[in-house]
Length: 409
Image (tube, rainbow, N blue to C red; front, side, top):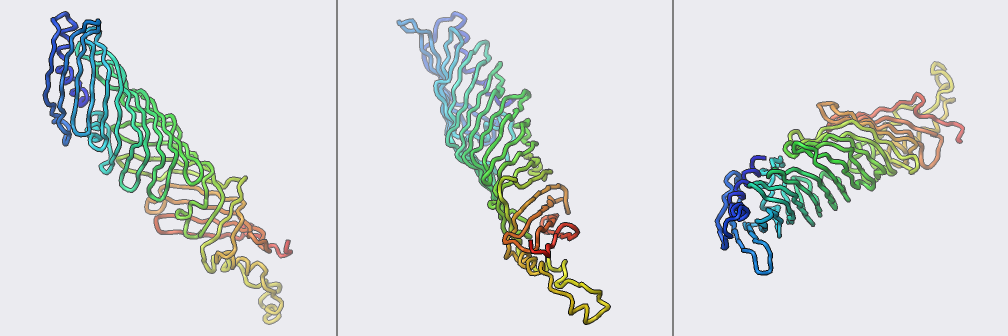
């Protein structure tokens, strides 16, 4: 991480008196100050620094050296014991709204251009400083933060991260994060929990990522994450999602639905290409009653069944017409296709197949259901194919998919 390494080298120059006192030179007492220009990081404010030295006192305490850093949105104090070379962060605070881009550049982490953060990161840490090299641990804690990126936002954000310093090179040790809600694009993800550990070469291994969504839960399988090239490739496990809350995502062929579904969907996202459609399958939970209502579509069902039942061949003319009673299922199917009669779902399965028409996501919704009010129509099964951003193709098969019960059972 060349950017952060250069900053640490500059700090080493400022701390040169420590090496002298540790080598047995007469103790220095006084104060030095100046300004550090972070020219490598565009837009970064200059940092005022002050170096204060105290000699050992009569009570036997060792000499102390304190480095104070101050800039808009930044304050920190680092104390060093020259005799032992031990150091600790006395206090530290960084305003993310001011320093996010500079920190990301120092850590060589990629960030979306529209990303904005608010909140104060508190710093703590301790270790040793010898021969111009820093070793030890740093802890960063954020409470009640806020993150926004384009059409989505997340708040409140609580984050705790631990880093190790080995010869001045920082490496991630662990991250724990909690987010109250992530909202955007018509969906809300709440009670988000994330935990990760360092995986070497600046990467993180996200071991847990879970949250609440649409009345159910969503969990991501573990995945590797590189801050320098942000991307997520994982599998989402969905459990107990509420169909009633999916209203704005339903195909146009459905006007409403209720019940709960489980499933699994591939998640493929990166800062470079955005989100890509992934394969998956959803199915209705057998332990939860489900129902749906079709959007009004005259002829969707009735065009595929006769209004009257032909008992005699048509060549008999009027006799054939007089002996053809009304189809008892016709009116029921008409009520279903107009959305007046809800359907009690026996089976519902959604298959997601990426790279549909024009490269857009396609989905297949397969439904087996029966009229909620009971009728001569015992069971109707149909498939809704969705391909492309605007096109929706609906197919109905009556060969053992819609059974007409003329016995009235």
